[in-house]
Image (cartoon, rainbow, N blue to C red; front, side, top):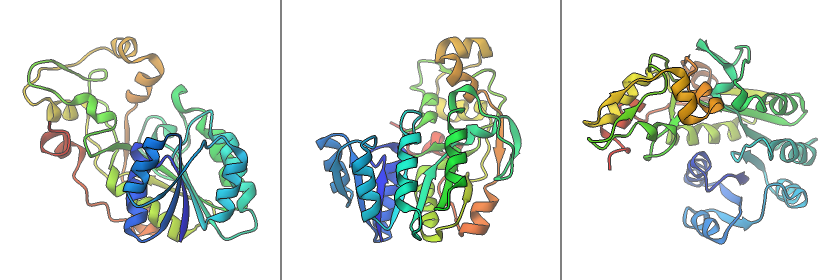
Length: 280
């Protein structure tokens, strides 16, 4: 299968690229620089230097492909990109896999695909875009990843200590984050392409829901772990970002396992911070 991929040089997109290539799919990725193009080629894909806001390019690549996977999701990109792809794929059996996010569901101890949405200001822009994707006649699936970790990157890197400088929690650290390893996430995107569901949706989490304090203590490696007030976190990180990270979110990922045949096997985020990819 020939897959048109966006975001191939990013954290999630590079994992999706690796997974697609491992499953022997041909991948064409749009990237902005020659350096990123070389990274795509090194990973086994074909690179096109351009921009996902280029409507003519996106339309051409969508029509030439057998599937489209969009991981370069952003508020200034999604409305135009999704509209162009949906127009290009309508009337075909080609799947379109779009990226959402767990913050969309707000505070919840049992997030599922049927949960009501209550996004923080940081990600409120996703809601109308996802509604447009789900209302189309195209075979669409939205993947909503939890807090993504692995390969020493992502949001959890904020908790990696050096034995000297303090590791600051977000708030008092009592809130839980629902998590997914980046390599497991890449595999779920491949399964979504294969499934080619009509209006599919998958909450992409491993079932590990640690507290932020547990994460700070796992990643500290001898550094002091310091809690702070919610207002202090907002001042340090910016109000919108902090408010998203202060959400208490728990989920099991049961639907992705049952419906997609997904089997996440990566380490938990606590283990990853304690003795995995975040060690320097």
